[in-house]
Image (cartoon, rainbow, N blue to C red; front, side):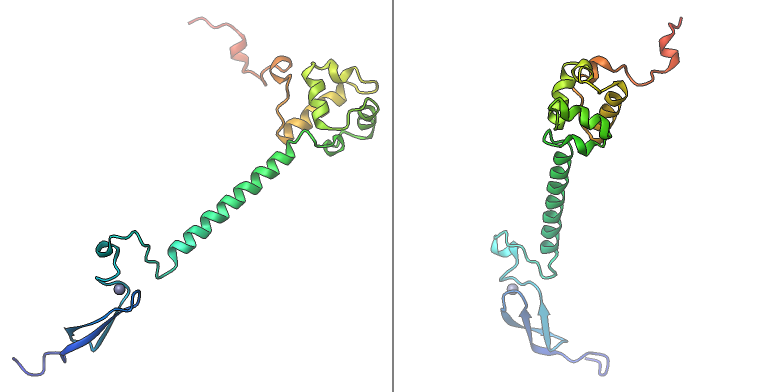
Length: 171
Ligand SMILES: [Zn+2]
């Protein structure tokens, strides 16, 4: 063997596994070796679906999933509360006059407004002091909050159809 070009050789270098603590010896140019996995604990050898997570990656991923689920849940309940029939009329900011007219007719919740809208525009217009302007405002506010108006399909024309569609065109 040529002198001076070979590293020092340790015939009994100790390998230590950080996961299971197994130690064994090998011949190496390093005196001791640390490994995260070994033949004793690697899933390939154990046949177990144990997750070896030395850097906490799985933990972090699961935390992220949890956070996402929580966020989604909050979002949904927020959305639900925005479109709850229990919502009070005052939350729609229709103005004092319209609110007073509705209150006088016993309409205090959005659910009641929806019931009346279900009977067509007259459902609300029949209320004394509640005019067309208030009706339009009410519908606008409800829509902007995400409510689906019961009479929408019947009473409202499709918003601004292009003029070309209105005129018959010859091919
Ligand atoms: Zn091991």
